[in-house]
Length: 320
Image: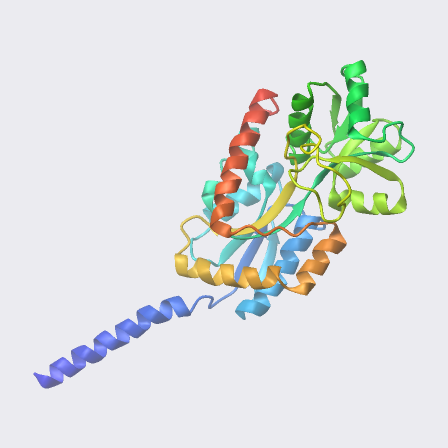
């Protein structure tokens, strides 16, 4: 009987240690980080930088896999549908708040457990350096004088910059001729510099070199807060025209990933975001630092989803 009891006790201890070890074993193999946007862009750069830093933090290989298409919808759906074990995570762009309303995917922020926010890109209204408009008020006055005559380029239907712009125009009670470029912000900038549109929206990352070279003038920031990169550029909201047209990037795992795994990922993410290497790379690329607690950010992102869905519906921007 004593021998049986001792054997049973030993078995219980082994099972207990095994159960505890299953938590401590994460991560025990390679992690895949899906970037839902194309290789070579800012989001891809941030994804690869984070993957390399995460590899050092966790001691396992972390590879980046690009899955672009459908306005980031293909990659976002792949992240959301992955096994909920922490071995597939992803870069989550601001498009997660628009892809459903645009008809590009079925995911919303509710489909993810956020690890950390990564960066923020303020949306700016830019004009050539020789433009007759020096301030946002100058631009608004011109639009009021001749409704629909002012042309402004932006990066594709339903992008974060366009949504912020439309919110600002509605708040100001004015009309502009919005020209969407399928080639993105780079094409909108080229069109403006070539005189095909009079102004354009651009993110801090795209505008940085043009401002530094003196080719651009910034009229306002369409985001809710000023950018640390352009601290002297006022927000449209400050000037009395409510909007929030900035973009951002975060990292997340599929909703339902175990809490103990999320705790490990979030701790590693916090360390990475606070590293000087990561901060320096953000500044070099034209991104602002962005720190919001992960659980709170999911709530914030879901609110953005509601706001952006309403704008998309109001202006009939969805192709479906």
